[in-house]
Length: 115
Length: 108
Image (cartoon, rainbow over all chains, first blue to last red; front, side, top):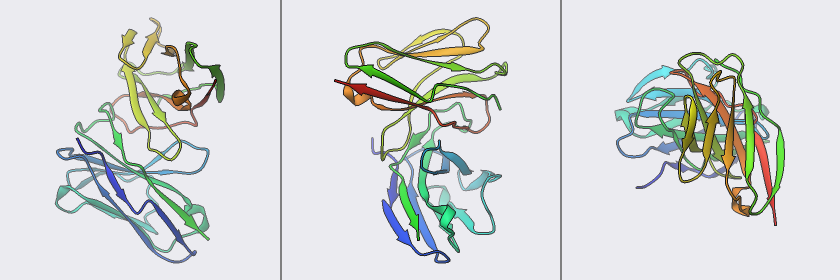
């Protein structure tokens, strides 16, 4: 089966610019996650969707980050305006089950560099 | 959320068995031990999950003693391609909380 797709794979922007990432989860997976992984650290959950509803966005910096999942399939994560500390890999994951116990399938990530 | 502690790094040679121990002294009754593997430039990949005693799949074995305060991921006969970061998580129905993981380097 096809895995989680993400684009772009790499993005370089200047601080204060905006950027958007796209994710297409595995077909049939109702739960979608966005993670931020800073170099040398483990992934940190930013937001979790169940279908097109937000389950957990407690760690999403809402003053600059936003995410949506229209129609309960694809999702976009946006940063506006970007800061230097936003340089990281942004990972999208999906799972068939809603709880954290369900196996999560991760995409390859988008590496963002903010200069 | 239960906090886990694991070694920062480990070294091994091809063909050896590697055991990575994870400590989770405050694990909750509902928590399961779950391990993910991450290769460079890729997202993490689920390896194995267990509650107690021993779980085995085609990739690894997971040993969890009766007190569940620690667990051991066992990788039999590692190869160069097993070089990766391995994350131990104790999770119930909460979100996944990744630590910094254990960097395993397998040498020829």
